Length: 263
Image 1 (cartoon, rainbow, N blue to C red):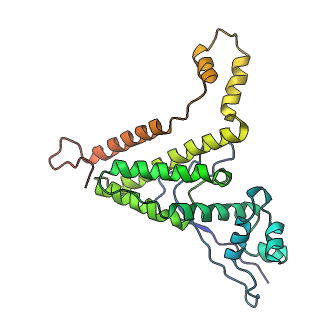
Image 2: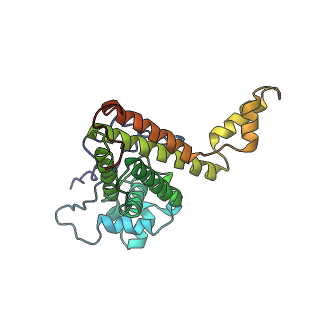
Image 3: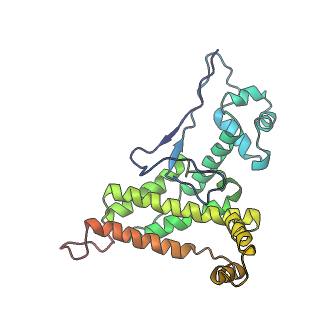
């Protein structure tokens, strides 16, 4: 009997603001990190015994370390044939995506954003997402977008704070995407540097500098000698300032009735 295709990922309608391109493994951050939902339905073929489910497969995979996640390892843990696991997932990559979706969704679904000034909400959202990504380091390097239905609540809460602070819904969606992209890029750069000892880009710059006379490119040499900073709070300040500009395009400060940013 023909096997059904695995459930597809479903994006949030109207949330994406640009190209939807997967990031490769060497990227410093995902090109599109707009929150998306990974469907978790566990449809079965007619007549198939209900021995395991898609959720059981994900839970069994989550109990393994990422390096040991394979279709066979999950099958062994569940005490079934690997074909039973393959019925629900296409391979190791999908297993890792599902584990990551579940883990991050559980971590982020209770992220509470403050009411009042939209800028405070942006900062709490950015810091909260980054904190989870850095804590779940072994999984965070595997993802190209913020997955799982659990992230919809803080995402919706941030959009609500932005709209309440004077953004229209379209600009609020742009803001959500910009903030999330910045957080992913920053966290991924830190995690890649931890994994390799230093970021591969820094290694390449060192190699290039070694081929030049010692008196050339003094500024870059000093920066590399003293250590390349990861100024997350400065990046966040820039993003917030940019969002203020985005907001003021439609609600200039000198316009009667202008809202300064709070409720």
